[in-house]
Image (cartoon, rainbow, N blue to C red; front, side, top):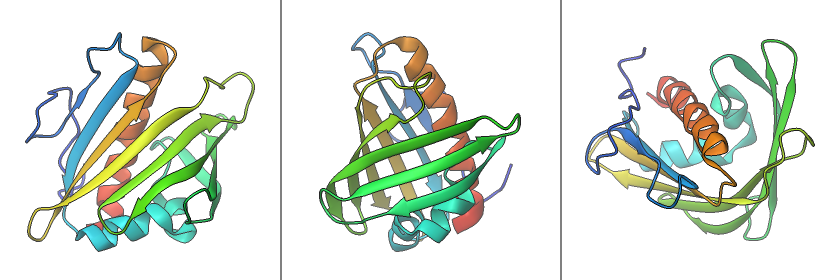
Length: 166
């Protein structure tokens, strides 16, 4: 674990790191951590394809391709390849873009065996004077299994992000 990010845990607190699966039948999640970088640096890591390729997948996978059309209504696509060779392709469209503090976009999977229906991801980057609190909220999961799988994925991604920007 890198000293440049706090470990996301299942504390569900507002001020600490953690995950809150929400009260709505576990169809939403909230994951947060603090990274040692400015909101500008974190926003760039979230919105530039060359940066996304370096962190935007779980630790046991690699990003094979990342495409970003960073305008409201523009699309993104992230192709991830797991250790066993299985490909997972996330895609969506940007709904809100407020550099360097907020991104809102849709999210689903291209592969038929992974599709879950469109969810909504909100990224909030809160300046903490030399570091940034990253808060991810994802809503609209079809069931608690999908919610928990994404919780684990985001936790892993945030550790990678912390190592990249810190």
